[in-house]
Length: 311
Image (cartoon, rainbow, N blue to C red; front, top):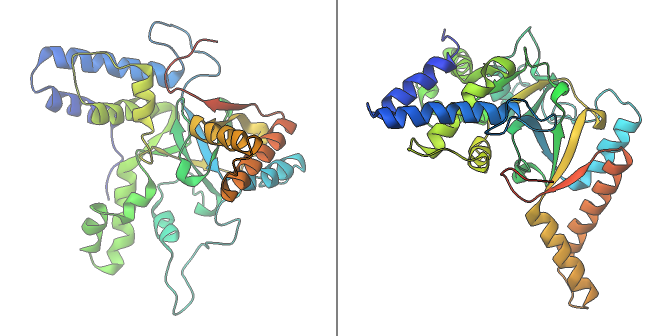
């Protein structure tokens, strides 16, 4: 059985190899790691205290069309306002019936390195985000959980998308084993990806950022750090136990691209230059989603930059 990764040792090893005995590169690498850890904690590059609304958060992306139902379930105090695939009946725990095979999500979930005997059907997946609008592939509205929504001493994070457990090259390392050993081999690989939010997040984001940006004799900016922490669909995954409602949100975010497209659609409509029908549909869905979120007293913000801003 594999042991969990010592992320501090992993980071130190990476810096030593990447710096290649260049003392200046090593010096800047350590300074940049400190800057990354500060950004994750919500501190600016020259600040000693954290801003309450800043720092790394768990985010989930949801299609605007589903936001009203989420808000309504939150108002009704339903036990699971935000639903995962098990709540929706798409997946199940246990072996499949004869003649059927496990779905990809079910294979991955069998390997998740959960704590305290938690079950995969009570896991709600998210991504670590600093200043962006999450992962557009999963939905155009980014829900940002507040700092207190996660028990930081027990919440599991993975240094990548858990679906990588069934993708190359991990897939090939596991598929070479006998079928009865593959489940355990996948669990061993998942354990190597695991960290705990409070203990490991700063170090894990430091390693991911250095790997993405490379070592150089320059300081990283907050924007560069933010984009490296969640680069397109390359993110660190959060395994949150239990669902949540709008009362656990810090805010909701919409990307500048979506806001600009909706504004252009409105301009075309007013100028009698007919916009595409799907543009009108999505514009209306986002308008209603924002209306419902504000009804539940959730701030909705358009993300225009990944760097620091001044009010």
